[in-house]
Image 1 (cartoon, rainbow, N blue to C red):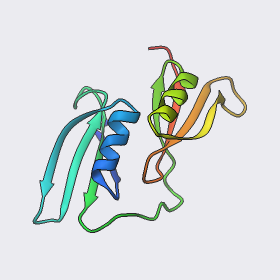
Image 2 (cartoon, rainbow, N blue to C red):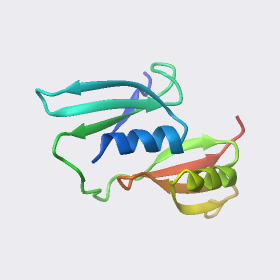
Image 3 (cartoon, helix red, strand yellow):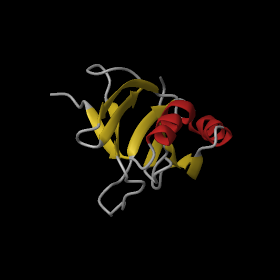
Image 4 (cartoon, rainbow, N blue to C red):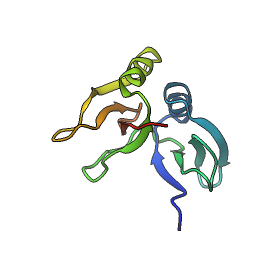
Amino acid sequence: MRLLHTMLRVGNLQRSIDFYTTVLGMTLQRTSDNPSQKYTLAFVGYGTNPDHAELELTWNYDTDSYEMGNAYGHIAIGIPDVAQACISIRAAGGKVVRDAGPVKGGTTIIAFVEDPDGYKIELIQRAE
């Protein structure tokens, strides 16, 4: 078995594509418009399926926001230098909601950013 993708519902597809590609450096892999069902999909990631998991960004026509609820946690991305990533993300217009620093009760360096729809993304410092 293999994790293929995680789906996030987004309020503005282009805004989300721009965030994940420009701010977080992912690549737009493919899109699929489904007018009869009133939704469009965009898949972004750091590589293509099945070798790399992707994010499926789902935009439902005429829906510009969603309730977050309290079950969703975050997406995690491994990155070599979390502090530098926070600087780059801010410079690209991204929102850092927890600056780089050690995880509570540990030594691993993490930070959190938020996408335009409010989804949290954890950056975890890891060697490449």
